[in-house]
Image 1 (cartoon, one colour):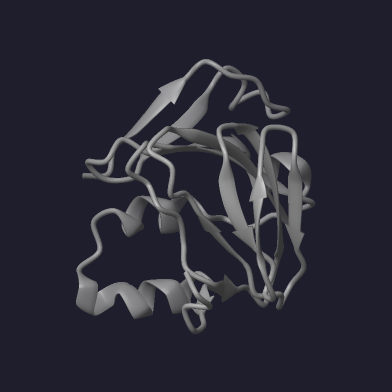
Image 2 (cartoon, helix red, strand yellow):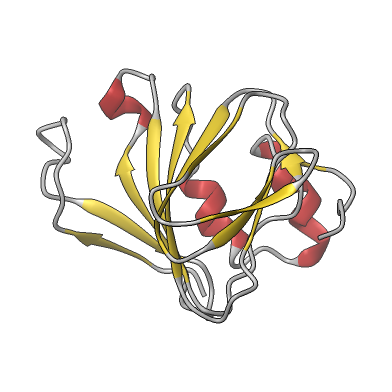
Length: 157
């Protein structure tokens, strides 16, 4: 089930001030908080907080052709794949994937983790996150293609 709610927060657009959209990623309990939309940053970045539930695993190796991603771990441990090797990220650690760079996140530990995701230039990802939880498996490739997610081999996941 995908669910969205508005919560208190802060941003630069007067009409959005005080509102953070939270997207529920299915029944597992993971959420995405929309902290700064493309329109709020003049297209420079989009910023999201991904609260990974204990059962969340993360995306397989993939790349994007229209934006780069920077991940900052706020809580918990996650593993990051940089296209060559996996490494563990802990609170305060940062990883960056430029446009076209293969990358992945996995969480194998049974505790939650929280990441900030900074996408540059800013892109609209809210629809993708919302649809991801409810899309039928036969439509998953179309959804990924429409939102610039290009998956590659499993890379020893």
